[in-house]
Image 1 (cartoon, rainbow, N blue to C red):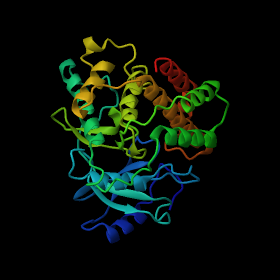
Image 2: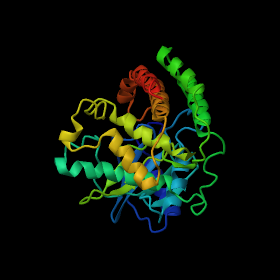
Image 3: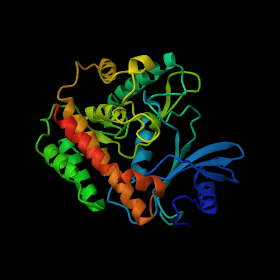
Length: 343
């Protein structure tokens, strides 16, 4: 067993999988993926199969954070639906095996895009990727909660009230310095929550292009990944999360579309993405979109603060990147305040 999040106790994993995963045969080798700030993720390779293992990071964790058990449950429930997910195999909830809970799923072979600007694709191939993201997002929100057994996957009540309270507490628990913009944004959100509109759906919670794999030869999503923040919630938060990401600077750090001539680059505008989503979801449009954007900036600032705190404490999956991300908290909070002005 190891407390280093960049390493994996391969003998322990192999012994456990031999006992609990039907058909598993070693020997196994492990390779850590560079992506996956929150839950360390590894490729497991055996002579006849390729798996992916996601684990909680070791060390003291915030309550309800790094919920690999929930990730496993929701993806297993979505098997065979219109939502593309990897095939789930086994969940280990015993922390004594490798130091934290983990699950194992199939490795999905497909294309991974880190940037929504899609520089590796020809201009005419970019828009279909964005359109597919809108289609699958509508499919996630259209999931039959009763048929999939997910009706209890999140509590009743106002989703935004619940989320604002949760992430405010998470932020306080990982706070390092006072950020005036974050204080102002939390107060604004707390006093501007929209009334209930009856929309209660499965919500991914971190829907962005680098959390999905696309078919090798078609603009079609092969699997949506990283369901750690998923719950039963309000669909417009997921839509706003896409637009929030796109508002970031273009390039490897910001991973957004700000500053690009989207029409010239063959990329969707914010309005086109929202309209495409609404067409698939059967909705006339989204009112007060500024609130949902402000909320997603707030939540992302809270997530980044948690990553930063883990980096300072030595528990981050990628400590160097975690420390750099911590510098973005005031920027995200300020962007949330700007979005609030349009609500």
